[in-house]
Image (cartoon, rainbow over the protein chains, first blue to last red):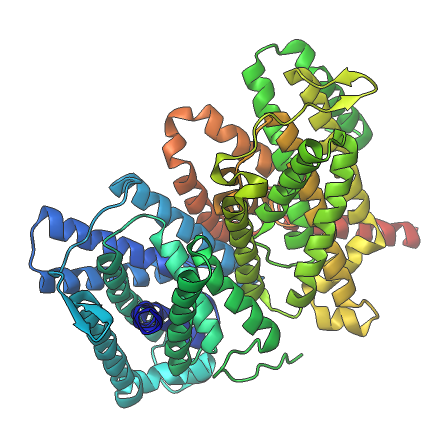
Length: 290
Length: 323
């Protein structure tokens, strides 16, 4: 029972980690929280449902197209709802606009795909067992997909010119501009990459629970955001660590305490961590300067 | 044209509000106006937290719901009358918000937003799962009617006047607060809390007290909502309600009392007028919030207008000194 719960928690943690990376990357560059992140990935997952059920595309094509679509929507959200805002109190304005975008996308999805839960079957489901611990093929695929995503993201951020430009932007946007970096392009790319990885995460959770619905992005997004804060927002390894902790805590909580409060555990962990160490486990201490 | 004196306009509006139920007999329209009273009270209280002290609360619905649940439980389980139950539940909501807010004060914008959002979710989950007390998702039906000196509030018209009283009391309280030193201190903190601290305004004290006051007022609105509908369930207190209140404050103008009243009235009445478009309601809210932030961040009746008024007063003062 215990190890089974840990394995299930790890699977969930992988998904949270993939979604949390998007929050962390955007926060690292712009110091804003992309509240529409969860809803962007929900739209991407619904796109996958449409591609798989209406057009009968093969799984690989569905995954690539849906994740690509998520990336495009993520970039469009940045272009429409964040870059356009020039209000004096920019922080508040961006927050309101992001929440507006999130409400908009969620209810748009309800209009387009309905309020009922859709099914997403991308892979055949096989069950394996090692001792008393059961594993499904979908869980294995999720673990493999997460590993692949993390490695490629690591490569992009730390081993390419684009990654250097991204890290320069996260240090200081005005200085990055002075160095001849196209900062708007990099910001756009950061949203795109974050949404792509989150799109894969959305496909994973959609096929893991075999359920896609219009509010899935809201809860998933909030938990992933909590995971990003837990690990230290702005830090990529932190987001992954936070995701895993969140997934395991949630599974242990619903396994041993009560399933009714499944969604509450993530928030309780977040409350505790914010009161004890607001900068997260791996985050840098933030000091308010005047 | 000379603008009408403010007192005349206000007393005219008050007289209009008082005679509305005598003129209009359709209970449907009265029902919408009562809803407006509830939402105006809620968004005025949210405006105190969001607009004046600049704290981003996304869990306002939790305190609204707490007010409703506390009052209902006190009335049904402890057999208290409505007034005492409302008083006790308001105090209880204030205490709960104090306990929840005290540790969150050191959090900045987005963190506070996610913590308050979490509070809303946890509250709803408790209402859903603690079936022994709240009956879970089946809700609490048959909430008794309020009574005053033997008069029982039963008809729509009587609830109209009760709602009007709640709205007017809130409005007077909030606008007195706005013009007082307390309101000024809050706005100073919103602009810059470090600067505020340097001139002797202790930010923690003001942020905390404004949060508690705002949440208690939301609790009162919840009490009224419970006795008015006679039935409450967790599904009435979802996150979308918080979003609606936020949209009302933003659309009307963050920090402006007339703005917030206009915003809430428009957003409560609009979906009723556009019944056929009710599926699109939240899509439109979302798009409106984005568009407002891009083109008119101050809202319909934004603080820009108010700022100009303040400057005018200042300029007049100077002129008076010169002459």
